[in-house]
Image (cartoon, rainbow, N blue to C red; front, side):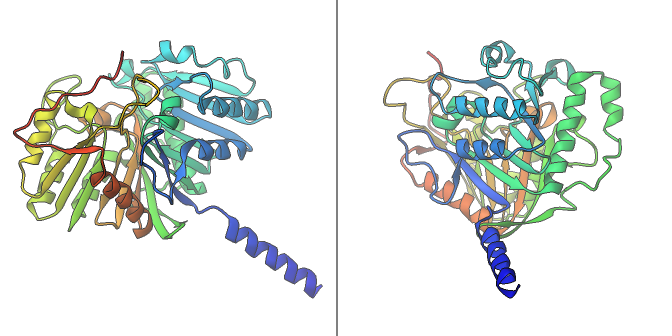
Length: 409
């Protein structure tokens, strides 16, 4: 009996040692580039592992779906269909804007038993889009990040996401998904507004009540945040408020990488969006070194003028990145840094799905994970610093002029 007990204890220790950390950072690396930290995971294998491990449910929120013959997304879509056929209940929530393009990429998913697809009519509900990119497996494992359900997001674009394994965190994300799923099924403005105040039936993970997790390099405290408020249960944390608080914590260095950044409202009614802009400038004014990387896709006007206005501020440095074109030929809407993350003092961070413009917080569905913990924050800082000092970035001179790249044929 003692031998059996010792063997059992040994097996349990081995299982615990081999278990994946509950919080992991995930990157997509464009082929032929120097992106990609050695200690981060890659997107496609993480997605495949999550899908293969599904036993009851898979919920996916996607801006659109675009596959390509022979791409690494094809096995992912096939795996989703296989899990549905095996009895796993799959729900896929899509935005209406790109359904013409998405429709031709659903052949592997349409008509599969246990697999439902719903379209969220954001244009009618808020005037925005469903821009979130996340997956929830068994209400317990979550992937959230900048990665669209696009073959290019796996192979030809620099992306950053996070994989979180925790039931309370997963239930909180599921509450946000369920709210939007119900809105897609019955897009009634009055009912949606009333449903925001409905009790969730559990205590969600929020900014006031984060969850403690184990990362590969130490403990972390995390919570999710969502946009827009009008399509989020009132009990959940709001993205804009959470990001302003994150910036407000900065005492020495604030790093931000995002595809586009502007306080000028580019969609809907024109105007000025002060909340994030004021937080960034206030950090610089109190002596924080603010370092910002945007994609070269952000060089159109008036966004370029806005970025130059930031670069005029003491303690703010802005660079744009240019990913070299694919050596085998031009790929439309690819070869870009699409990542959306920020790091405060190497102690706090966020990874999100939205660009930092007004519409992404006010009328567009997006999501983030906010992180307190030196390990993940330092990993993200290393990703940022490698880019900041690497061959793909250019300093924005307020007196200079920069041309945006060609993104389509």
